[in-house]
Image (cartoon, rainbow, N blue to C red; front, side, top):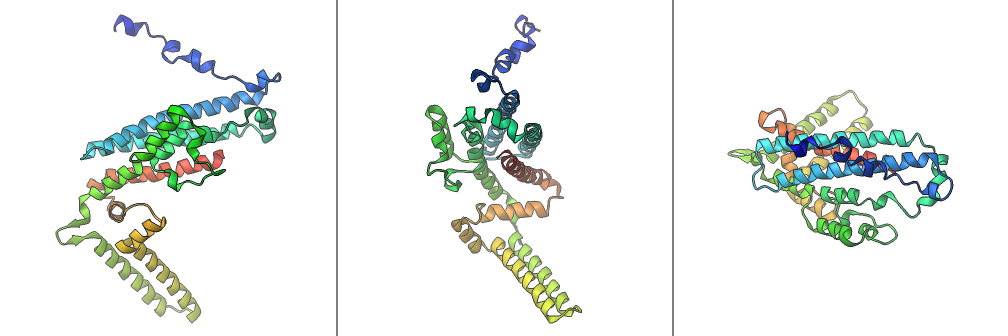
Length: 297
C-alpha cells in the first residue's frame, strides 16, 4: 500500500463534510424551521445521487451498443448493468414510502418557501429521459414552452446535444435489426409466425362454430378473434407497421420488432438467453420509471 493510499480517510474520500452540510433549510432562514423540510431535502438529494449512478450505467451501456459488433460477453455486461439500474429504480420507488410519512399538511409548513422550484428542473432526470429516447417531439409542452427552457448555459446545451444524438432506443433498435435469425435458408420467421397465428385463430373459430352456444355468443366470440387477427396483421404486415410508425402509433422499426418477437418466442434457446434478458430488463426499467414518475408527481 502506497503512502498516498494509506492516507485516505473515510470522511475525506466520501467528502462527507460537503454532503452533510448541504441540507440548507429555507424555512429556518425565514425564522421558523419546519421539521419535515430536512426529510424533503435529503430524499431529493438522494434521488439526484442515484440519478448520477443511473446515468453512469446508461452511458456505459450506450457505449457498448455503439460498437459495430456486440459479442455475447458485451450483452452480458449490458444485462448486469441494466439489472443494477432496475434495482436502483426499485430503491427510488421505495423511497417514496419514506417521503409519504410526511403528510400534506406537514408539506404546507414550508411549501410556499420553495416556489418556483420544481422537480421538472431536475437536469439529470431530463438527461436520462432524452438518453432513453424521450425526445422533444414526443413531449407535451406545458405553458407553451419546451421542457429545456428550465435550463440555461451549459446545462441547456447538454440537453440540446443529447436531443441530436442517438438514444438508447435508437441503439437497441439498430442492434435488433442486425440479429441474423429472421431469414436463414428456407426459414422466414415472419411468414412462419403469421402462418402459425392464422392456423391457431382458424382452429378457435372452428371450435366456436361447433360449440353448444347461442348464435349471438358465437358471433360475439368470432368478432373478438377477428379483432385479434387484425392486431396480428398490424404487427406482422410490414406496410401496415410502417404506416403505424408514420402515424405515431408505434416507434420500433418492423425488422427490429420481428427480431424482438423472435427473441421472446425462442428465449429458451441458449444463444437467445442473454438477448431475452436484455429486452426484459429494458421493459422492466421502462415500467419502473413510469411507476416512479406517477407516484412522485
